[in-house]
Length: 128
Image (tube, rainbow, N blue to C red; front, top):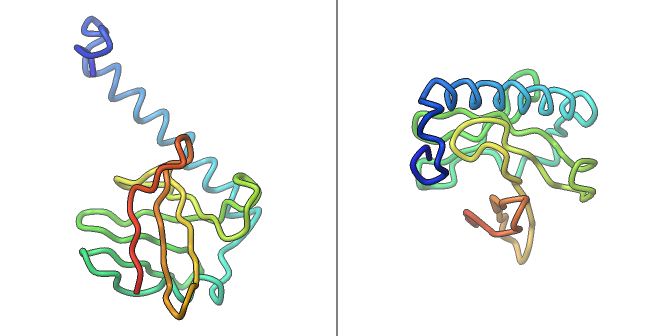
């Protein structure tokens, strides 16, 4: 990043601090969203369990939803008001941090998509 964006003089500490600050801000947004719209266990029930590719969704005893991938357990919060659409969630950690999770039930299949909110591009789509 330093070479591509011409910021070599900033050094790695700058980017480490920038990342840490961004993570704190995203955690604060996720906490606010979780208070505003708690996870509905019935609504996320079709998501729970194994999706293959070493991906799964888990709901803990406090009704917090997590996307689990190798080496990562990222909290997922409802973001209906943020995205002005029902059934949209936000990944608040891990490698897919900041992306939307959309859930759809069609033709007897449950599908989830991970979508980049800035571009609308689907990053990952799985169905079962």
